[in-house]
Length: 138
Image (tube, rainbow, N blue to C red; front, top):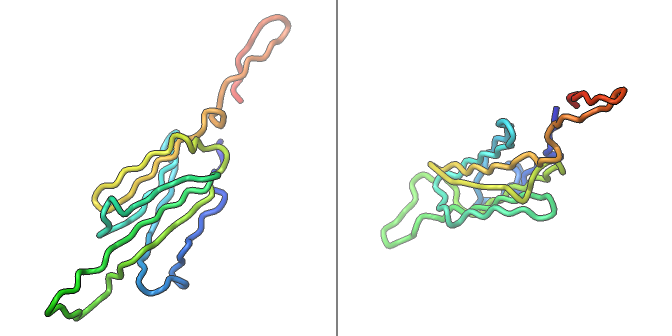
């Protein structure tokens, strides 16, 4: 069975250390067959402000939720939905195919799909026994 390939998951901006003007980026990570999936809630974020990149086995997700446009006569009465920039970063294990990562964004949810590398998938190995071959599962 394949071990969890996410050696380290961390928030760049944790809830406790998040400066004002930034918002939370809640995330789920799960395995779905031959893929690991990262789902990130990004309500109110324009798709063009989302950046997903991988460098040296580090996956980084950045996003920005813009502030309400201030205009004459505008006055905040209650403000609980912060705006600003946020980032999450995780280190990916060697059993993942970082060259085949894909991402989609729908209904305020970013979905990043990370396939298991071919060399990390279980395979059958033939063993010679007395001149005949038998397949065993490893």
